[in-house]
Length: 468
Ligand code: GLU
Image (cartoon, rainbow, N blue to C red; front, side):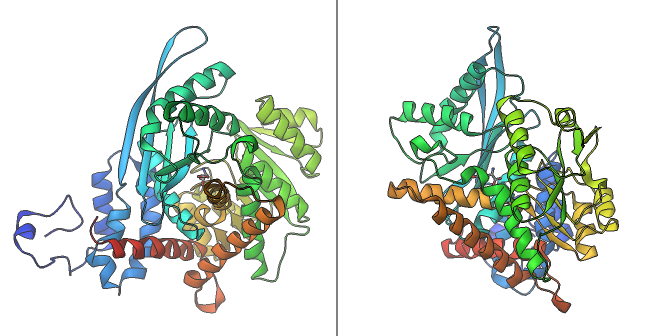
């Protein structure tokens, strides 16, 4: 009998009637996922986190079992991997591995960022592409899920090296993407400079000017507020969650990890809404500023980190009210709300227990899967306000979707229109989470709500297409 294994067995092929009416359970399904994806723990983790909710949801919905929908979403449409050669400033020939994972295009062209980081491998990109599929569905915009990247470390590289790497990467990637096929954007290690180099190379190779990437510069088809969107959106989502309890951000203390685009814009919005930001971090440690990381200090961080490519430790030299904690993450600092905005698995079960014990009432994830499975269970069991990244960090890709619309129509919307659209989209995501995540006693399980709402949209489109 075919139990979600490696294709039909001989007798399943010979017998026309479906044999899977006796459904495989969650454990059996996860065993299959682990067997088919050896050495890919991040991917298995992302699938497990979703499957836990979906199995409950589809228990009485025969069509999703019959058509093996979750099994199909958890198998990328394709994984492309390629060699990326480039020459460094000392004339050494360097070889990196590039990827594009096209997970699912049931509701729109593949869409998702490109990550340049030494940790990039197939497992990480498959988990990100899988998450992106649900996140993009939640936005309500017509975007499928994908992700790409390379195990290239941009740290310490010259501008010329970055340009040559981006051009070489695009020289292979261009054949797999397109405005109606797959639209990459930025992620860790890929910002407006890298998007510029990649767009330039795509345009040069294909001789076509199209909305093939998002996060572009304003001069050549970019959208206003794309830079701010992920961080702002994560705070809007937090605000929406607090509102269900009659609370707001005024006077609340916030612990934030990361110090890149997402973290600094989340910090900015927290300040604008009357909250106080206590921490920021990078891979070397975190800074704790009990007097608050104000807008002026955030501007310093933006310049220092992006333009000067400095380290967050220097914040404590610049601002004497702050202390630097080497090799540590900020979750032990007591706070009202926390926003993990750095990277995957940066908040573990133990950290989650500390946050809950210290009275934290709301978590909004700006990064993708920053909380490990144990931590997710701690937050869910504590029944605090906990937003998974696929809901709370969707503002970035949502404005990417708006950039695609503007490119297709060859127009540019004004800032206030875009700000309003971002707000509306985050409200819409919150609403979708309520629809499927409300439990007895009025508690809202946002993980469950996001997983089911994202799944349902993609699944119903897949049902319409038959077996493809
Ligand atoms: N990398 C971002 C994310 O994780 C943005 C993707 C995009 O704009 O396509 O959602």
